Amino acid sequence: MQSETKPGVVVLSSDAGRHVARLTPRFPDFSFDPCPAYADLPALLERRAPKIALAFKIPGAPFPRQDLIERGKVSWIHVCGAGVDHVLPWDPSRLTVTNSSGIHGDIMAQYVLGAMIGFNHHARRYFLQQARNKWSAGESRTIEGQTLTVIGFGSVGSAVGDLAARAGMKVIGVRARPQAGASAGVVVGVDRMEWAASQADHLAICLPLAPGTRGIIGERVLAALAPGAHLVNVSRGGVVDEAALLRALKAGRIAGATLDVFEKEPLPADSPFWDMENVTVTPHSSSDIEGWQDRAVALFSENLARWEKGEALRNVVDPARGY
Image (cartoon, rainbow, N blue to C red):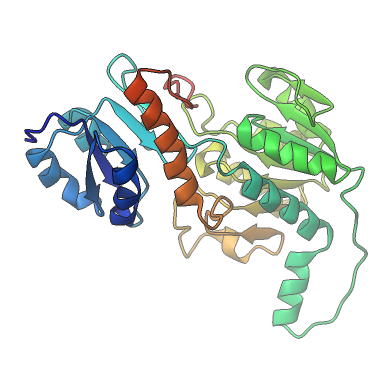
């Protein structure tokens, strides 16, 4: 175990060395340990006893929740994305978890706006036609004057709504604790989610995955959508009942979907979503703006300075709510 008195910080990232090099000069009173692979963590914990973890998801391996929370002595984990479902559950009397909510809002809003414009201009259909050397035009629609319903009107959902409103759309927000939003004409509670869905030309899902949100976009919400509606999911795959969504798309009960997240990722090769002509699939990339890792480290740095001074941390997550 570490003998020095400096508080230890383990940096879980495939680019851990670069992040440690950035953090060390700013925080000389902390000891930083790079951990570029999750498989390296147990051995590191044998030698060291970090109090803090800066945790990026490392592709190709499950998040080492048990090592960090149950075997380690970590008292604070900063998650470098917005979702914390891979860390749940935890005891908030023993562990603080913060996330990087807010750093992805602008790029995710642009993704949703692009998806809606692409849907209105038949981008998926024309892409398939190009692959088949087929020439067949159709009339497009403008998003101006259309209604966007945002399920999950938090930091990302609000950014989505703000950009849509600037493009001339009407915005309805849905959140657990309704409060006025700058861009939304109305913000309602979850009890009015089906009504809000019934108003939508486009439905954007921006909810975190938590016990109370798993499968929340199911038969009843999908049935409330108009036949010409378009669904965009940039949250977590488990928030949407994929079987119900498949049925709605195949039956033409909704017109299309743009899906960035799925219950199982990578999306299996035999998933029907790949080949559906009214579905656009992207590889969980809506938040992958250039330099997002540096944004996450900057937010962590701000919080580490607060921790050092004994001040309240930003973006503390309530494990009961998942955000």
